[in-house]
Length: 199
Image (cartoon, rainbow, N blue to C red; front, side, top):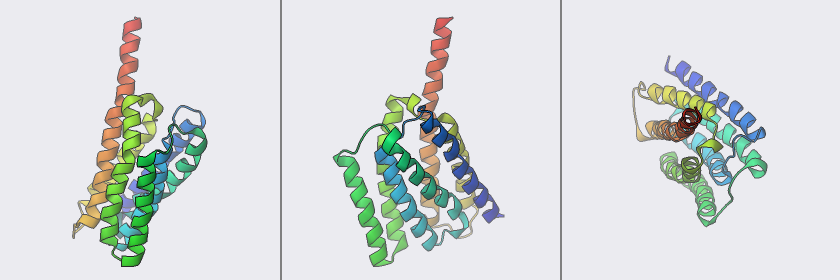
């Protein structure tokens, strides 16, 4: 039962990238290159370390969060907004070092904790952009991401042996999607206020 819900969460999470990609191609959404390249690298590192650390029940969403960001990172080179500053480059370097550290030490828990910190840092450019310009993000996609992350997080809570390795990333992804939904909802609020003002 747990694995079934995990697969559903993974499918939902992956589907969220479809409207996001279409929104990018229609130039309605402008991804931050730094964030998506960091998420791409960390996504693959987290997927490998999460699975190796014993999170095999809910690794489906992690897989979707490796494949999806990779596609968007590539699109961000042409359709993205913003560039790579020293902070972003530093995060990219640290993420690569983290992956190398996991390979050398063979300690997936350490790699997972490190990647989690880098992932949080990598999200800051997009969180800042969304706060300042909520219209540059696709609300439908993040709504789908939120549903997938919520299901995944709730699924983790039903695992018999809860550990930091199995709970950390699902909880973080749930919180991140929730914050993004709050920030993007300001876009709809602005539109509502503008419509009411025109009347």
